[in-house]
Every structure is written in structure tokens, then in C-alpha cells.
Amino acid sequence: MFKFISLLFILVSCGRVDINTGTRVGERINTEAVVVDSSQMEIIKSICDAVAKKTELIPNLANTKVVFSFAKKACDSSSFSTVSEVVTFLRLTALGPRFIDSNGAFFYFSEIETTDDGSMAKICQKIKLGQELKNPITEGSEYIYFTTSAISGSDCDPKFNEPCILIKKGSDSGSGLAKIHTKEWIRFDLNKDEGRQGFFNIKRQVSSVGCEEGQSHAESAVSK
Image (tube, rainbow, N blue to C red; front, side, top):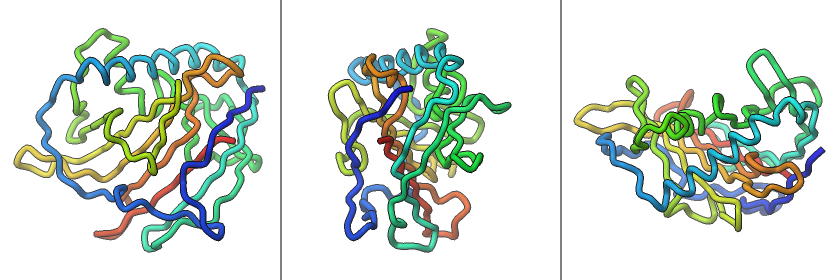
């Protein structure tokens, strides 16, 4: 069994979580692909290498217990719910390895991030195949943007051997622009001790998918 050790990055006041104003979605970004610079490439490759090593060990990690501090915000709400403790277990399911809660249900952030499954999969596959990594990655009419720089510490606070990456997903809105509908911040653990390498210890998401115009839902999880 491994145990994650991390600090809760979201601000808690009277049992509630404040929303950072920089997390809003709806911005429009140029879709012209740009080659990822060497400094970011180094960080992204280190994340993908750690994820790959973890993926190889998944069969040995089945039934591992991981506890998350979790909070969510509904589309029409102005604040997060009270932070709750969610006990999960890494299970090998028909959909792949997943975090399953003690009631047998999929945890909101159930994807454990492997080389084939999760938010990093498309990015890591490019590196694995030796293809030039460009930002954004195009997938049909969808665009995947990613960065490891200029990330607000209130959204994801990087630590030694624990880099953060911000992934934005958007749909083609014409005129060479994509409208961002989802933002996800992930902090990966690259430490080789305690079986944590390649796992995320912070994941936060804000998305307008499934909400009325001008609204968004949000979820935040930190492993304990």
C-alpha cells in the first residue's frame, strides 16, 4: 500500500472552498499549433515517463487504498460544497484501472492517468511515438491545450518533484479560434518512494459542459 502526502491547495473557510476567479472558462484561443519549447518539454516528458512507469506496475497496485479530500460546485452555485473525505481503491475494471469508492461507485476523478487513459494520454502518446509535440493537439473539432508555466499557485501549487500541468479543452468556434469549455489542473508526483511515482496528488476541474450559458461546474480532489 502506498500513501500520498500533500497539502490541500484550495482555500477552506468554515468548511467551504472558495473559487479562484482565474479558473473561469469561455475564453477563445488561437488554434494555430506551436512547437512546445524545450523547458516545458522537459517537464512534460518527466511526467509522461513517471506515468509510463506507473502504468507498468498497475497489476501490482490493484486494491491499493487512496483517500481524497473532495469538493464540488454545481452549475448554478457560487461556491464549493463542504470538503469531504472519500475513500477509494484502485480496481482493475473493464474500462481499465479506476479509483472506485467504498460503495463500489466510480470516483469523480476515477481515471488514474495511464499511458492510454486519462487527460495526459494524448500528450504522452505523441512523446512515446517520437512525434513533434505541438500545442494544441487537434482531435476532430476539439483542441487540447497544455502548459506547465504561468499556473496560479492557488489553482495548483508545484513542489519539488511534483510539477503542475494545466490542460484546456476547447471546441472550434470558427475564424481560427477555439472556445475553451474545460480546464483541468493536475499535480503529478515524480517521487520514486512510497509507490507514488506517476500518480496525481491534486486534480481540479472547471467545465461549462452540461451547464447553462454562463455557468460552470467545478470539482477538486487532493490525495491525503
